[in-house]
Length: 155
Image (cartoon, rainbow, N blue to C red; front, side):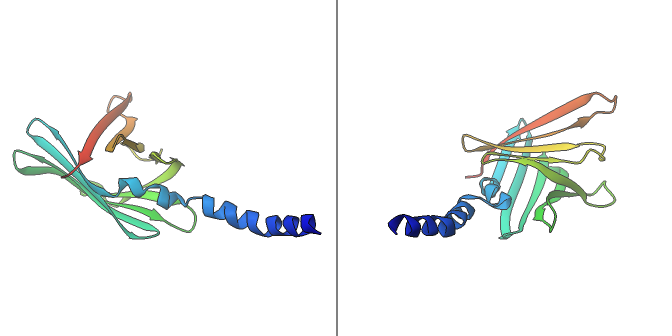
């Protein structure tokens, strides 16, 4: 009788225990939420991410050189009914560009849009408390190029 009770207990509770150990992909991105900065010479880049709901992270990026903003974009990571998308809204694009989440683990997220000119791939990686991002895609001559950004938390 004890073994029957134990079997019933396991049959009921194992699915519930498995669900609590499975992390939502949006939750796996919690390490990106912060204010970040990178600096190279007289150029500084800033990026920030904040959680506004379980299905939406809002962000922005800005690059400043000699006190002038030379690049800015509004960013979102949004969970829709079918997928998760990184959405970049940049002035020179007629509409926001969506990049689909194609890979995620506890320290890295990869977003891709093979139809976009550049970039086609955006990667964010947590490395020793820093944020390493990269953008990749075909350059003007058709050769694949990759640009890396290493950011630290703003203090």
